[in-house]
Length: 194
Image (cartoon, rainbow, N blue to C red; front, side, top):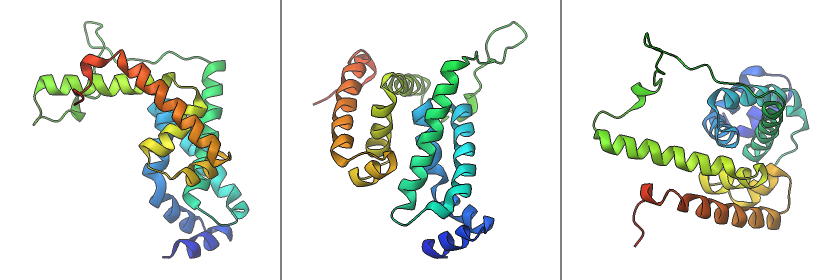
């Protein structure tokens, strides 16, 4: 069904139409949440809160990019989650084996066709990138994720974060500079630049 018709149905309270809209954007929205809060559980919580809020506020959507409108709601929920985490720091509960050693819970995600060394380097690089991304101020991280990770246009990102396009560009430039600087400390993990 056409997105505009789904939006109109959702605005009349049709939960199924709203769910169809969300299915179109759920991967994008979760990716944004995960990169902003840097924790899967917190990202899931933020996304759930955002989707409940979006359904309640769908009547306030007045056109434009639904993707940007939803991204904005997710970003706000992520900021709420980050504030909540600062107020109530938590320690993750790690799974332990019989010897009391931590169990790696994502072993099943590894690609068996890739060698052990490549898996290790890939995992280390991913952690390094996420660590650098997490070190960015939330405003910079958000525009970096929207534009450079999720490939939104400057206009869509500006609409999503409710700032002028020039602000998006300046935050993005600063975020890129800080990411570049932060990643230099992980130079041994980065591919050789030619």
